[in-house]
Length: 143
Image (cartoon, rainbow, N blue to C red; front, side, top):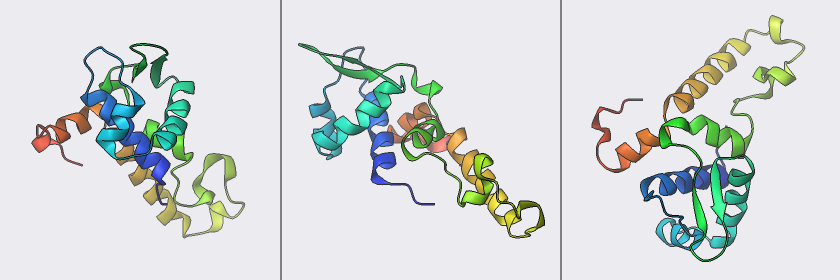
C-alpha cells in the first residue's frame, strides 16, 4: 500500500485547518502558501472533503473553509479512506473482494495482520493528536 499525494495533502490540509482555527474561514490561498501545495490541486481535494461533510465552505468576502467538526472527531483513517479508498495492503482482505481461496491460503494470515495493523494505527490517531504533535505537545503521543 502506498498513500498518494492526494491522501497526504488531504491530511496536511485538514491539519492546517485545525491548526489555524480561529472561528474564521481560511482561504485556499493561505493554505496553499503555508503548505506549498498548488491552489488547483488543493481545490480538487477540498471539493472532495466538502462533499463528504469534512469541511464547511463559504463563498464571497470572508469566505473560505473550516472544519465541520472538532479535530478530535476526525481520525487519520477517515481522511485517508475518503481520499484513497481502501487501505488494505492486498485486495484479498477487502471485505467486498474476498478471494475465493481466502480460507485455504496460508498467506492471508500475513495480509490480515498487516491490514489490522494499518487500520489500528490510522484509526487511533486523531487530527487533534497531530495538532498536539505539531505544536510540540505530543511528546506523550505514542504510536
